Length: 426
Image (cartoon, rainbow, N blue to C red; front, side):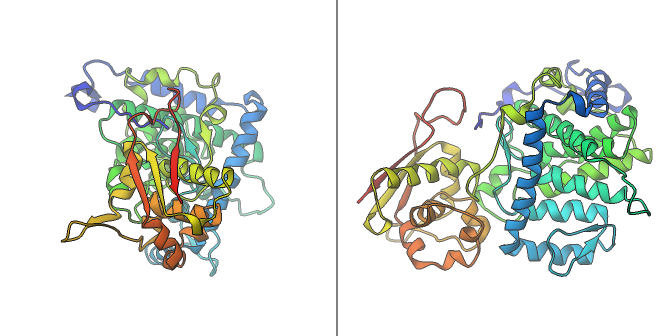
């Protein structure tokens, strides 16, 4: 799972160029690359997509909807439902799995369903993006479909093949945009900063926008996408999570604005020559089958190896949780940050563990989910719900889990380093 970022000293200088386009020392391709990317997405044919890519796309859609269903146990879902009902009245689209069958506007649905899906850290992940696409793409796609409903409910506005083709194009562009952003920015931004581009091109295709309008939509999504600081929520977990709610909202918004003539040309996530080559293999190399993975447990991807190591260790040695005196997890620096906010030092100088009080704190943690895994062998939606946080035996074991940074463990997925290591003292 790649986490190395470009240093600030390597950032290109920017100057204001003509046509209201920011030029990075002449390195922009301006419209050329954006036009090629937009044209590829709009012209992609179902028949040109390999079967394994189509199968993976279907699985990704189901996985995302399943994540949203699992999130119904969490407090964030109730909060979002209340907010949307007040702020986005309408009857164009549904809020998924709402007990009251709540309806809202298309933009409200994109925002609500993506926020709820993002609320449970069990959605798909793309290597080299340090983030997630499906949590925004799938809610945005269904919200956009609601705009295309015919008055005659029997009329097929978008075929299943066309829907899958649009989803494939969106995933492929989003995953490249994610890598491009991380390679050109010194700060670790949330997924919404780049999955907004995937949502944008998805909606452009479903709404049948022209290449020219799609270029503007991509620029709008790039400009308005949430460049939120991801490490802030890692260190102080709250419901803002990974920004995918705003990514879905901005993606649909960008297409709708461009359709009405709103301009926004200029998309450095695509056009910067430093990263524009990432889009050269569109249609030849499919990231959905090369770098697309799913989480087994409902916590941050960085905590998954420690959970897997704990479960493996206990199975291999027939360890029962009651016999464990302590657990020591070796991991990389960024993953260790997940636990920093859960420890404090008393006036006497003793370090004490602060138990998670919210689902978000549990999901952005290592100690608590490791303790859960030791007892249950899994960390699912119920295990990170607010009710589960009150379990005394889990709190006790979590207080005896320590997380240490191991220099030999790299966050890179292809350097041959160790993926995980845990030690249990009985």
